[in-house]
Image 1 (cartoon, rainbow, N blue to C red):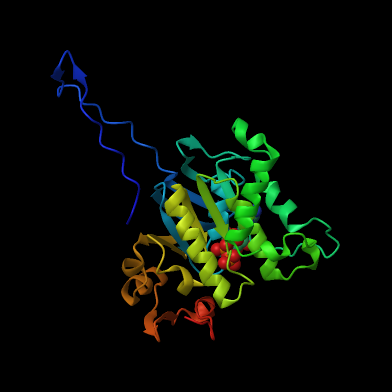
Image 2: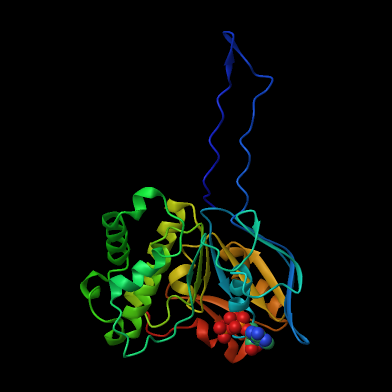
Length: 295
Ligand SMILES: Nc1ncnc2c1ncn2[C@@H]1O[C@H](COP(=O)(O)OP(=O)(O)OP(=O)(O)O)[C@@H](O)[C@H]1O
């Protein structure tokens, strides 16, 4: 796992002598996301419980699991929209709360209305509104530069001036990703960001998000049913199922023994033509296989 390391602190010089007795270590940055004994229950339905998780700045975490496992609900908890039933959640050292401008969010896709006359660059620019920015960013030129850069990063420059209602689902999705990235958030939450994207853009967007995660030191939680584009890029996987979970590297989690134990039934994880295929967990798992996807 590659995380930014705290720089070493040089020893202070005092009166010509090197002081080694008071070498101070910089205060550690709090985890970008911290969950402790977290549990979420709706009525009598327990989605997950006893979840302890720290996501470090610069870490890329895939959140996987079948339909209804509680992946979106977990993101809602981090966004401060859904309270935990048990335990605690902190974002960058503060309790999770609504309207947190440290978080960038790519929500699960909803088609933007055909009638929407909003243009792509306006939609991406909305990602800069409502944030507390430094003086420089108040300048319109700087704002426009950031929007342009975000559009270029998702390969959306060509349709930046087209009304979003006229764009395809995949094109709209790329704009949403640019909108979440433009504010350079500390925590990036992506809910099925690869939906509607063709295989080439699935890879491109996954790589872009991985790169931005490392470069900016943001922590990214990436909910997806499309595991193959992201598994080679992620540091760890959180796999939610049947109220339980596993956290570990892709190799630690995505194997037959671990998933069989988690599902309580025989699950086979196989490599087929360089792709990971999960089989045996009934229809819930079919979504992991995306036939025809280019490698
Ligand atoms: N506010 C709510 N009240 C009651 N039940 C809810 C509420 N929100 C979600 N649920 C239920 O919780 C379960 C988990 O939903 P969630 O959307 O988190 O699952 P998911 O893992 O993201 O699924 P998918 O892969 O299908 O998107 C679902 O059965 C859903 O119906």
